[in-house]
Length: 324
Image (cartoon, rainbow, N blue to C red; front, top):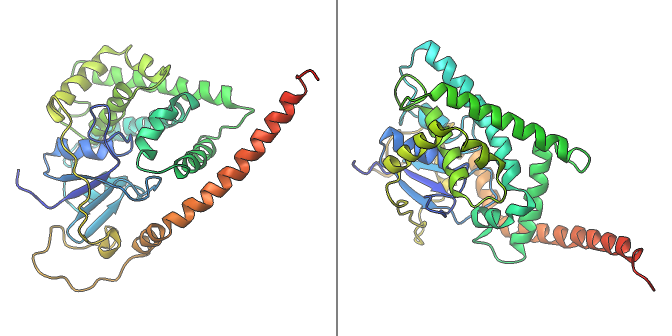
């Protein structure tokens, strides 16, 4: 395949995966399924950014936080669309099962990943490039963000955990019934549903999650496991492909391109393009990158303050049980 100039910025790889990020894997696999040549690069900036993964293609920059994520950007910019030409009935099935994967399975994995028992996995995915105590501060901040997203607190944690895992088990069952012994989920061809499922399954199977309910439930469905193994061999080969770090030379930052929401040229330009007005999204991205260190210093201070309060409270409780 000829080099198209398409770059996909992802979090770093681990455990034999080209990217160990459960959010970055689906678009990576989508491009592989579509047969589109692209260059994966490790994003060393803002590891806690909701914008990752990021796609750069000519004058187009797309963010994982946009509507539809990177797959939505690929479709809108007419770069590739695995779901193009599907009959209406197949599209309806695809949308229904995709919703299950992107809600029930995504939330259950988010919960399991951020359990205290899996802090080493979290550190490998999100925090490995950060120094102490910034990594501890971001871990503290992100855990609380996950709890808010999932609606979990100290009073309902057991109930919510049971609900999340019950829905995940139902999702695996539904996907297994849908797939049966077929090569793909919809219309006998690879679609965005395959990319979403494979991204989830690859991560669950490879990440060293402690006491993983998801891995246990997934392994109950032999056809899903065999399907993932076959596709992994086809898409990733015997070993994970090389992912290059971003060059140290001054390549244009994401904000210097037009956002995918403001339509640009679909392919790389061979001539010097006229300056383009940055969208609000690009301005925000650049601003966040500029003040990243300041934000993390603030997070460290919050971590130290609140962690200190928790330690003091625990100490007060322990004092009651110590004999004078």
